[in-house]
Length: 83
Length: 541
Image (cartoon, rainbow over all chains, first blue to last red; front, top):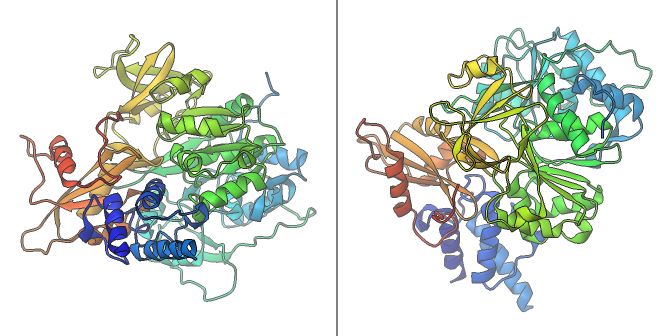
């Protein structure tokens, strides 16, 4: 499932692989799970692993504020791609 | 190229530019204002400061989001002969409170929300709080003896009656910049006009800046990089684009701004340049106007520097500038094509004119041999007069004699200095100076934490902050999210540990002290997964 996969990728990137640490609504930027230099690495990882191309204009704090926000972004981009 | 005799102080530079370049832009974008009007506003604010009794040598603390108003407060403070104390607008109130208490300001420039967060514990030195967000709305309560007023943001007319500017000399303190302190208490580095003039005077000549240049102010005003952006621009009458906090890591906005404002001069930390170059946003159109890109604050991984260099116009110069806040920039290196072919970071180079860089070994003897590593000691008029209201055992005597022991390990090769790492527990995360001791002090404030330790782990993409903690017997074990939320109240965001892990007990050495080497091994096991925060054993710090 996409949501689980994204949650796992985020946990690998931001929490040393500990999936239990990160919930869907955990504020990733506010609590410094994800800092600005890790942000683009996560974008690369998602591009490779989640069948999506995240354009630069979508790399915003709102779209990466939580796992849920990232899932919403990826789903939105995937549906635009299919349409 | 020899220039005209330099003005003595950076505030004199602004005064001169207001006369010579009165109609030229001091700031561009949403802060747009010309030098003449800007300086009238500065004098108007200075008049208000002086009416509150601000005297030469006193301090004005400024805690606000970045804008031209913040810069107006900076210059108005200097115009009145006092020292400005800039605070990171984004840091938690607890940390701002410590800094304001330690700086003992006579005046505080802030907004209502921030003032209310400090109002319970204002220092006895404070006489006036000036609020940047106008007259409307509920007025905050202030303790007895503190006047509050709204600041007038419009520049007065050209004919307005304004007081004579205060005269300051090279040894007067222009600014106090607070940096992370190992005991948990940030320390205030005093920057004199002499210190500023050494760096700014050199920079204006070396980079051949003119009134036609447009500088980006990317760094916060609490960060020493901003002194170049503001004061080098004012020295030559160039324009400044002030990047807001929410734009600092927003690649699209930065790229748009570079082309829209025709930026010629960009000075920032390597991690930002890595992001810019790696994102693909630095297209030939975006970078076309750039004449010089300057970086400082941390080592620039050579792979990423190469990527950046390829995206810049052929005539754009690249400079590595080095120096802790205590010396501001004290060494520099203009990147040569051959440097990019090496498999190591570019050198930190050679000292600025008339400054001395010494390398000493553990016994304090000079290191004479190329390739041998020692601590870098800097001497000259770039060196701070010392920390404000604080005696720092490692540098107190040094500062009195115009020297600073940087704590940075360096080596020399062919007359150039190369950075090799730190001798203590200070590190740089995305260019921000972080004392691991300050993180540990914040962790220890958590009621359930018995002991805590923080380490930095070098990774392929930068530096990961990892915290380990043990819990008091009988207390429930707080999870990583709770630990991070706790840190949020005490530390700026960039100091919140990326990872937090509970341990039954922290590893100790024979003397009963925390064994950081053992902890590092624990960290390597504790941090699992192929994620980006894994340690990169192949990388040398």
